[in-house]
Image (tube, rainbow, N blue to C red; front, side, top):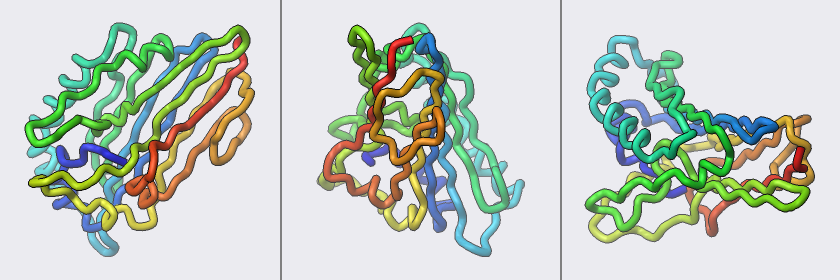
Length: 223
């Protein structure tokens, strides 16, 4: 999972002597509009708590960077894709959450989201913290094929760049992705299905050491 946690390095140092968990929920309607909601939870170690006062100090420190990241995301979205939520909050005394939600008028618009520009010390941007990973869609006479990249192949170390050792933070946490749709599903590579919900669950440690890109795939019957 080649993910830009560097932006939030101060958060990691503040609270992530514990661990990280990622949840992604995608809704696809019959007209192929929908939404993507992403929640990144940062947990403290056992017996450690974050007071509301400590959190407000941290939130204040991150306010300018969050506003910058939100504006950068807004400028990269095509017409028909909107930011509905961009939030950083204290969810419990032991966890902080970054939550983002975008809505789209048509699934194919997700493929038009512009990539985040690389930083001065990066060869490429990779997926950013907004977790708007690649989407591929294809339509045949009778089917709609949707592929969504959940994680990227682990990249080799970059010379001169200090990498955060994320594996020590994820511990036994899971990456969770769910697609909910009223469309009829022909086939999918989901870990499991619960009615019209398709669910992918992968240990976070595995997501950080993928040997190849991990794609979710769903074939829908055209309505």
